[in-house]
Amino acid sequence: MGKSSLTMFLVLHTHPQGVCVAGYGQSGRNEILQLLPPPTLQVKETQGLRPERDFKVECGGFSNRPVHSLKHVPDTSLLVTSGPPDSSLQVWQVSAEDSDVIKSVSAITTENGTGQPWAKIATISTRAPWVLHGSRLDNVQVTEVESRKNVYMSDVRKTSEFLASAKCRVPSPRSGAEFLCVSWAPALEGCLAVSGFDGTVHVYDTQSWDNSGREVEPIFIHKGHVFGGPGGGRDPPQVTAHTWHPQKQRTLLSAASDGSLHVWDWVQSCGKCG
Image (cartoon, rainbow, N blue to C red; front, side, top):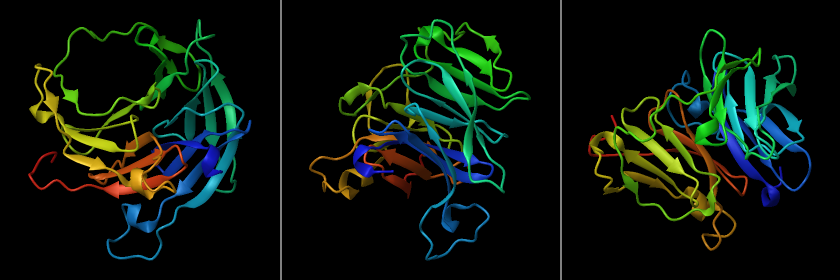
């Protein structure tokens, strides 16, 4: 996975606990890897200083398409990816313990998908796992992953009405909104993280937001990708994805366009966000 030609995306597995990373580069084959996290990130491990800080590769595979979005299907060993040249989805099987291969098992095509941008994905844990996907607000749909049947195709949200709004103080993205990533903290009420505009990740407390649309300040900014790269801050990479650890309240993972993967905690002293 050459750092000079890789853009990385990631998802955090909840069972088994691991991290899956993927992306795209200049070559036609793009890697998808499942990594075993170091002991300090494993919930059952006792706390304390440990020398092991590296991720270990458990299994992997190759995609002939660029991977722009990647999600784990809860309670299964399946992954779903999307990427150019259209809005279809690819379904992957993370192999059993006696194999080190992640293999492609099926594809989910979309109506009128030709010429549409790649789809963003959200996976849902149900009796029959679902995936919500779409490239625009007006073509969001839910599909059953294994049978590939459409559950429904009308977006029932009232996008003209909202519970709260705020203006985040972030710079204009260098590449439009292609890498914009917004995620709610699974274990902290009212906290969300935003990335995709530069080399940082912003954490916000939404509990004080109202309908005024006023500008709000982040309660934490992760700048590790800006100063940790070979450019030394002169030409920083862009954060392409982030995700929250499902059990560790204040732990996030983020990946950037230089192939770097960061795991970090943040501290808020005023009692906000939990």
